[in-house]
Image (cartoon, rainbow, N blue to C red; front, side, top):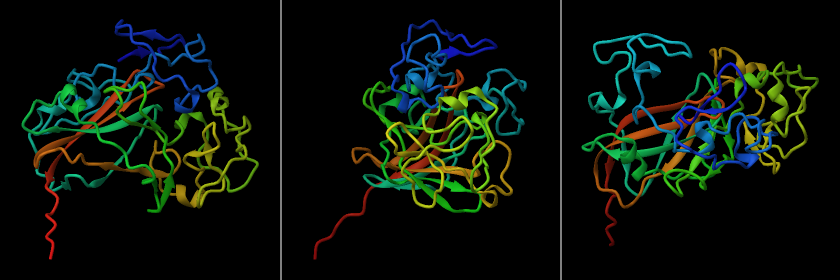
Length: 312
């Protein structure tokens, strides 16, 4: 990890590797946006999202329970041991599983993720051949591009809310690769399920002031509205970027930690036409900004050749 924010708000390097933040523009920062970049108030400047893809990881496919130790720890480091895996086991050591998922080389594929504890930041999808060691270096050889304009949030009632997405392709690792910023505000910034009209209840968290489009009293500043939304969060350019406040009906039955009533974020990625057919492993890497954490997950997929075009 790049840094740690412990009990005091002073950012410090954990690894001592000398990494410097490459993401400084407020529109690409998911928390503490009003702090001047690299100033003492910029307390998250060493955390992974501020240099996407640069933070070292214990395993490219994650660790069961989040730590190498065989017991549950704080910060939701919980894992139920089974005959298939145990706490601390590396995801890259798991046996292959035939998921039945086949993607067409040169085509597009829909992917999705869910988060329980939102720590801001952003994420990337990438793939590695299944017959190679599942290392970070292997996954970084083939990052997948996002199909912009095909992202959405899926709400608890099954509806989808299209989002523009915020993408970062400068200051990333591997160089020039694209990462997507988490499209929802961290839940600890304040209430997410609000009444359908003002006045909104005030937030109890000071960081709420950091959102450029969010008034301190919990109301929204004027901004272009996206379809189906009466109160969208927007980035500094006035472009809808974050999920709207959901109405109480959408929030009904939503489990703990899924914030604004959404159950998943959906993206579409491009499958490089240069790849060969065969077995691959899809990797998802999430670099946090408000904590010194990197979350990873992997899944088995098959890539198939595009159908031949036969001319009459």
